[in-house]
Length: 262
Ligand SMILES: NC(=O)c1ccc[n+]([C@@H]2O[C@H](COP(=O)([O-])OP(=O)(O)OC[C@H]3O[C@@H](n4cnc5c(N)ncnc54)[C@H](OP(=O)(O)O)[C@@H]3O)[C@@H](O)[C@H]2O)c1
Image (cartoon, rainbow, N blue to C red; front, side):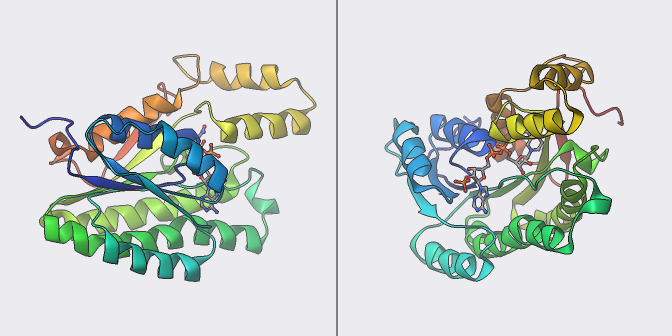
């Protein structure tokens, strides 16, 4: 029966050592997928590897890589695809620091473009030939609701997400005929280290208690709460599965209703 079964499939989960990436890796593995994780911190990666379910004899592994180091990333990807085929790719990494765009340096914009757009391009290009051979590919990009509505004090992030969204839509058009879908998940405020960092920085900036900043953020969300990372992961699990076969080129907000546009 076609469903969420991902046995005999392998996913590359970037930024998989914590937060949304880790939750996605867990959800995919719970449904039979073998996982390769990427992040910089080897200790955290090893911790996730131990937790990933293996009840369908999956083989999980990880690679320590910095996604801002594009030349190392390119070499690592070339070697990786000689050893394994991938059916699912989760393009995900740490978010750029917050702040107003008018104050952002060129270096900050360049770094974010490297870590997000260019790293995703290198990784995706490496995996496409294998996905074409299998006539099964699910490329899922973890972006932000700022694709639809720019967020205050996230100037560099807003800029890079827009670039990623058009990159993704273009790829979706090019790859649709090969059985490869390309979709974006737009998380709202999600309870991870990233969100806690942003709240702490905003509380320093506004000279206010972190709890008050968090409450104000929640007041803009119709569900009046932050997401758990698992709630983002369930959307990724669906898009990665065989039953999402006719969905490509979309932006899926998972934000408790925060985005006010259609
Ligand atoms: N949390 C939210 O509220 C929220 C909302 C909207 C969008 N998002 C976006 O969703 C994505 C994931 O967010 P998150 O909250 O899960 O963040 P997180 O908890 O900070 O996790 C980020 C992950 O990316 C890895 N990473 C960071 N920099 C890296 C690099 N240079 N090379 C390789 N791996 C790197 C981290 O591991 P290492 O540090 O070990 O490398 C970690 O595994 C981000 O783009 C974020 O902006 C988050």
